[in-house]
Amino acid sequence: MRLYNTLTRQEESFAPLDGRTVRMYACGLTVYARGHIGNFRTFVSVDILRRTLKYFQGYDVVHVMNFTDVDDRTILESQKAGLPLREYTDQWIAAFREDAASLGLEPTEENPRATDESNLVAMCDMIAALEAKGHTYRSDGSVYFKISTLAEYGKLARLDHEGIKPGARIDTDKYEKEDARDFVLWKATKPEEPTWDFGVGPGRPGWHIECSAMARRLLGDTIDIHCGGVDLIFPHHENEIAQSEGATGKPFSRFWFHVEHLMMDDGEKMSKSLGNVFTVRDLLGHGFRASALRFMLISVHYRKQLRYSRASIEQADEALTRLMDFLARLDRVSGGTTSDDVLVRVKDAVDDFGRMLAADVNVPGAVGVMFDLVRALNAAIDAGQVGAPEVPAIREAFAHFDQVLGVMSMRRAEEAAPPVPVAEIEQAIDDRREARRRRDFAEADRIRKDLEARGILLEDSPTGTRWKRGT
Ligand code: AMP
Ligand code: ZN
Image 1 (tube, rainbow, N blue to C red):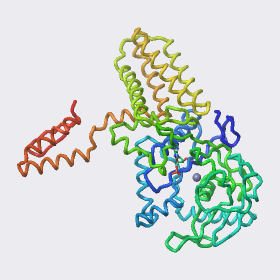
Image 2 (image 1 turned 60 degrees about the vertical axis):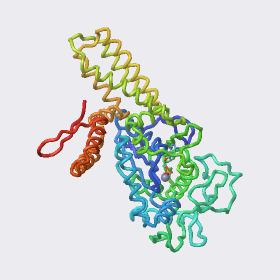
Image 3 (image 1 turned 180 degrees about the vertical axis):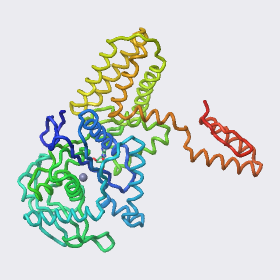
Image 4 (image 1 turned 90 degrees about the vertical axis):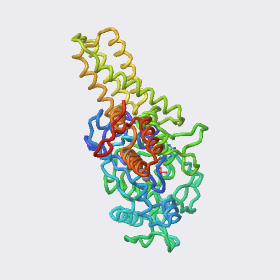
């Protein structure tokens, strides 16, 4: 398989270091708010990479995705909310899990939280190793990484060393390339901030050390693939390389996989700080189906920007409907005509689909192969050239495509689920019973008609009210 590697700025042939198991790390959500669909463009793209490695390349995958539950923003927002940090971030982790499940993300093998003690200890051990090797200095109670001690600093972001100001340092987690500075590893804390002491003095971690330490603890010194959005190349990933390679003396990640941004219609990046965000929940609340959202998020190659619009989700929904209509049509194929041509066509499409994925995860190319097959098979069915004996092989091919795409199974589940959440139906039944009790029959009728319009029928019986799906 070929993968683009940001480190070398070229596509390279990929195989895991140990032959069978791919060890990959993806920077997860900073849990100070609900993730937006820009974040989920990155997470869905990483999910597609993971599924490609598993189901088309046949590797085992150990995939770590962390939660950044301590950094400048989480501390600030928890203080604003008046909640302890861990309690504040718990709610956003729960929200992430809900959205990730809606979008069909496969669970990752590990989901470490930065503030778990084992991770904080690993961070302090790494800082101690960096101190022992002369890569750090202390100032005002904080520990800094001295970038001039590492000749290769800047290799990922291709920094111009002329622009680096020796000796200047920076305490914030995010900063621009022009501000390449000595960065903070362990921060002195103010009295009201969370503080830990695991061997390098009281304080709290800088953002960058968290990922280096969690990746090393769970995956070892050298990992196969490190993933994130393009905004993480600098400073986050550059600093991760400095910390990990400074501490171990070994290459940190062999491949760097970066996903381009989801943009708004007006060309702005979707970002919480710009305030132009939609969450998965917002869009489901607007009546979009999660399957359409997932399909939209993978509709453009991961290394190209994707523009968000309602029309783009609607188009994805229509394309998915065409696909499902075709699959439903297979149910109606009868007769016993056997045509080798059809099976050869299906096998070629499966091979081409795999080739597209093996070419730097070319999902749009793979989806194109799949729709060409749909068109060809629709024409063959029209011409009476597909018989019932071929149908299982055709189904199997589409099931294989869906192991990576993950949209057809989602659409089936959506269609099987009631159009109104069960809790909402039950609440409406209770409200209606209450309205009848107070003899407000107009209100009771309104509730029944409202549910009916949304595809749920109520049936009254002496033992109570039952609901069923309308037709
Ligand atoms: P954060 O919570 O800011 O650490 O971001 C979580 C992940 O989402 C990171 O991999 C970011 O690079 C990624 N990300 C943030 N904004 C976008 C966007 N508009 N499009 C795609 N990925 C994004
Ligand atoms: Zn990270």
